Image 1 (cartoon, helix red, strand yellow):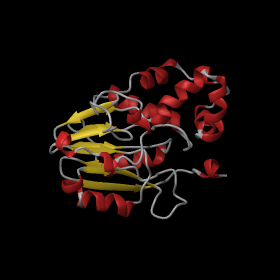
Image 2 (tube, one colour):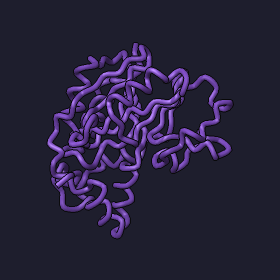
Image 3 (spheres, one colour):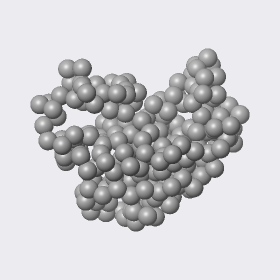
Length: 233
């Protein structure tokens, strides 16, 4: 049985399917998804549908919330924020993927999934979170909005609190080489960012979806197969 983490799919359905095939996921494995399933990429609906179907088919899939997953729920209730989400966050591509004019047209099946996402997981010697942990807080594991938004926090890590645990996160896109380097230094630095910037394939070294096999300490990369050009036009 393997424990595998993937983050920041961002509507890249074809890439997600291909990566699942590449890692040969089975029902004996545990798959941990670290948030940002939607926006920017062309097919957020099918990304969510695939995850829900995996759960229904008996796969052990555990899902965290990302900032984009919170954003769509805010956009649903706040007309002013909706405009920002639609034009700036990649919401336009999400709505096109759902083939809707209004967010209210998205069925409860998907809203229920988004509403029930977790904040953080502790798995063996790993802490899994979307963006990172706020080490200025008394308890960095207490659910907090920083878990989905924080950046530039590595220099705040309290290693005496962390102990031997390793933090696995996404949120900040990095290159394949950077992810590989973080794996090499993981036992020392105790952190690894697995967001390969799948939607950002126009940028050097990015445009990959990454799966981190925590059990075997192995990385698997899938180049983006989706047409993400509309987000960058």
